[in-house]
Length: 204
Image (cartoon, rainbow, N blue to C red; front, side):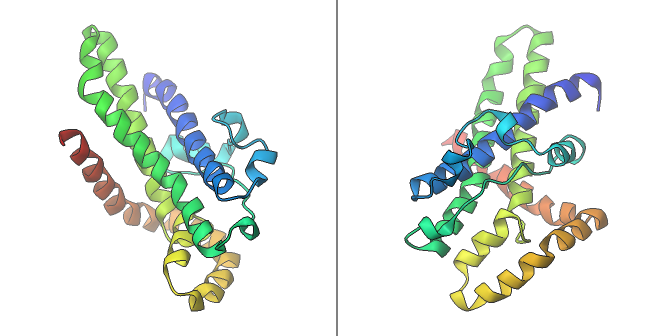
């Protein structure tokens, strides 16, 4: 990674994690949980959401995490459904953001002189890659990632106890998946699918 790419990667990462966590908090707030509001997380200010290690992972490997938004499911009318919707909101926000940046990529760089246009193109491309990477990583069904809560909301309630037991070992399992490279291999088809998905809509 050259210095120009590194400089452009930082604001792209800050935006991706901010929109991700803001969407978690806003979804919870809309469903009746004021916890995120009281903790100052209903903001796009990256300082409210930044996790240094997760941000570094995004810089180096194009996947990572932010400081999790605290959610109290007891505020929800249906806690299982509520947690599923809140968990889905973060990755969905990143997918929508990637779609928006892809639309910009189709025409915006060509409105500038070649040198400036190449920088704009790279910045937009980095935003697409980072948002899709963050979405794909969080969709992995491993606690404490969003994918595990989404899966728990889809599966019958009898599996709740199994998921609760897995949560205790989730961070260790996730670390092993990251170190072994299995996480990257499992993310690849998700990123490919999401990339195809966002490429469909601008053509409609």
